[in-house]
Amino acid sequence: PPPLSEMKEKNPWHTPATIIITVIFVIAIVALVTVAVLQNKPLPPKYKYGIVLDAGSSHTALYIYEWPAEKDNNTGRVEQTHSCKVKGPGISSYASSPLKAGESLKVCLQEAEQWVPNKRHQETPLYLGATAGMRLLNMENSLASDQVFQAVAATLQKSPFSFQGARILSGQEEGAYGWVTVNYLDDRLTQVCGLETTGALDLGGASTQISFVSSSYDGSESPSNSVSFRLYGNNYNLYTHSFLCYGKDQVLRLALAHLSQSGQSTVEDPCFHPNFTESKNYSVLYDSPCVSDRKPHGAPVAFTHKGTGNFSLCQQVLKNVFNFSHCPYSQCSFNGVFQPDLQGTFGAFSAYYFVMNFLNLTDTAIPLETVKEKLATYCSTPWPQITQQHKDVKLKYLAEYCFSGTYILTLLTEGYNFNSDSYSNIRFIKKIKGSDAGWTLGYMLNLTNMIPAEAPDTPPLPYAGYVSIVTIIALVLVIIFALCLYRFWPRCPKQPQII
Image 1 (cartoon, rainbow, N blue to C red):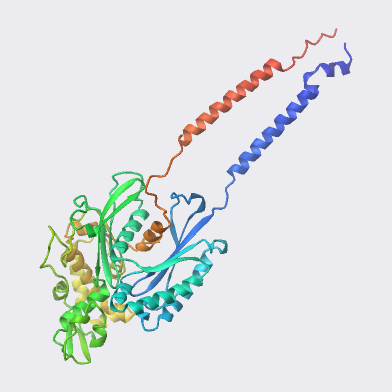
Image 2 (image 1 turned 180 degrees about the horizontal axis):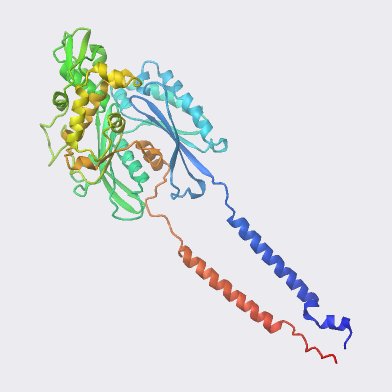
């Protein structure tokens, strides 16, 4: 037999080239596995943030939003992560001491610093939008309004965030952004064409908004109520209107102004519970642009506000704050304002929700007539009994729930023309998927261009197709590699038999 050394030399597994190829092959396999593991290792998510301050007529609230940083190109879902209610009244209440308006925001801004990571502070946009309270102050005293904004801006500029400005939103903007928020959170603004949107009903302290898409409205009649959007490749023609002075706090003034026109010392009010009494100042009641021109001459300094608790009579009083006598269009809501036919479902938020939730009337299964009956029973309940049942509620808010509930029903049915059938299409909502319903999210989405006008680009191949093609190519390469090995790999000679 040949010597052992000769056999080793003839064995192809012992040639230097083969050993080198084998080592390279093993290294390549190890590298491939390592890259695959590292590539598919879950990474900690990175987020971007945005902050919006809602400066309403009765209070200010701060909202923090976040979205995936790697999906900044209009595809990452924006979610609310935190909210902070500013202590004290709305910034419009600081007209006589504007510096306090800025001071009031500091606690919530400090909270925001804790919620937004330090490394994201400087790139986080900060917005402040003021609504009807500041609209009224601007009408009444534009200088005071400017001073309040200067004080607020000075405080916000000192924050570590990227302050983008503070301004008054128009009523149309407030209504439109509220509609965007509700439909964005409800996944109604998608690339699917023809998906029916949800209408938005917003009720604040000084104004109320209604916004919805109606197939019967193309914007030609009353163009001032038309807002057009192109979102995710779909066109939306939105009807929206904001009624200044028709938020619940200002309507209370309008109703009391109607009842106190003769300047009497006692005003009996069916919108407040029996046995409710409170002394009110005439000057304070009429200290608003919504009612200032109605103050009776020769009235005493104060009057006694006395409740009688009658739902039907309260509705009659509230109907007097609407004007149904004049309509220059084919159809109107009230005060000569055009409104197309109601269509689809509606989300009612802000004061709509808080009032109806307190009254346990948010269930859409409750018929309209039953809602009226329950409210009538509640309003007729004596005031001492109400205070005993709700000891944890502030008396100021508690006293107004009968009025507010009756106003909401009157506004929806008499004002906006909801009937016993369409009333069931209203959902009273506070939050949608963890985010507060309101205009703030829609406002930020618009200013940061988070919703594209056109549908985002998609890869040329679907994921499954891409994987299939890569797999086929890999198999072809393996087969070619195997053929090469078979063709060029040195064959072992036939071993001689040892006898």
